[in-house]
Image (cartoon, rainbow, N blue to C red; front, side, top):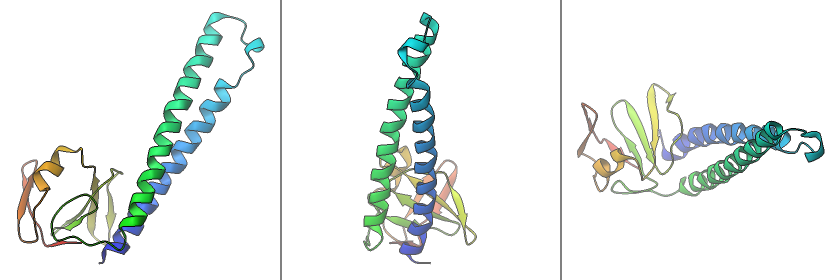
Length: 147
């Protein structure tokens, strides 16, 4: 399986994340847009403020998710010799993508796991090449290929 095919699957997962975040933004925007005149007591005003804070937080997450989608799109044609941001690592049972974090999923019998550069496992993997090994938890993984 080539890198473009795996990234297309990760892109689908990321698009789902973006859609869910947009739904959250919309929900909190509706809750925070209540007219101030309709909020008659301090508790209602407090809930309105909390909703606005949540809306702003989800807008930030939504923006970050869209930036991550752009990263995925830009990495489809790139290839790497060693593990770094944008690398796709193939082991016997897994694909690991370095750059963003989305929920893991199955693709043609292999689990796809994406990790950000901030993840502790990245430090363990960084700079390794095909044929090298890295450890995640109690398991050692042999790198079959880096794309």
